[in-house]
Length: 362
Image 1 (cartoon, helix red, strand yellow):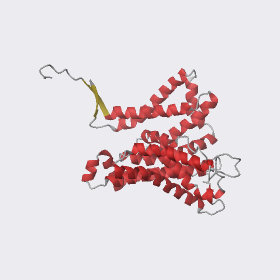
Image 2: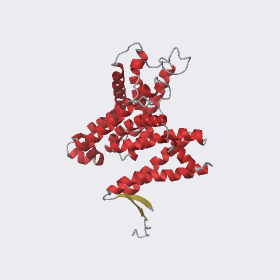
Image 3: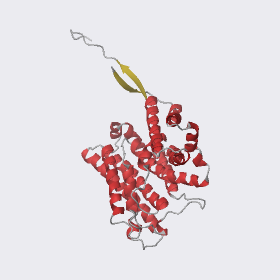
């Protein structure tokens, strides 16, 4: 007996939209079961996760802060995945972008100029792109699997950041805490509104999402990415460069992750420290698929996943659950998104092999 997946000839627009909604419902159902098994009231737990963070103005600002990097990273990943290039290392590109963008406020803290902040954003953008160029080079030059190389580079980036803030970049006036000196006011992203901490990193994310949606829908480059992602052979017949698309998609994805990194450090934290991300680069993978790899859909899915971060923090205080529950929620969501997509796009067939007779006949 063997199980095979047979691709369906066509998928209706209804099922394409229904799939992520069904995944969300299944996540809520199984999340409620999980809370019941932990001895918690499922309704109170889900209320803490998905309603309580929306009741205060300050928490709405925190929602925007967490959604910004998720959306920015996910729209870059969506281009990678639609071109059939699997960048799993956005967390590392996020970290390197934060490091590269922090060079000016850390090494030249006395420089005060309106140019500081734009240069920081540009350097973070470039830093993330350069780090993503490593798996791009290895894939196009040596046919190395980009999943493995991009993922392994995450841990190198995190250890490099840890080495910097505990060593040569440690604040000499920081009472031996592993962090850099605080950024000057010229190196901090300004707040969008006076009512809270939400900064302009969210605006970067929205602009990137709209720009990439326009590219995928109306520009030749977007058409090229879509064709090569569905059939590399057909793309080569059309004259499109496979290696060029690998470089473009990985560099763009890394650049946006790097921009997210320096935006997070400059806008929310104000200095470098060993932990600058709660796993944005990995969670953005869920955001990309939940948004159907559509940059505009990713805006909504980014807000949903950001809500799970805030809800997890609220649930820790209100019902006393572990912070690991947030990761379980996000893992359930990714599992159900991929499962629903698989069942909608493919038909499962079970084939039984008949025994071969002694004469060799089947």
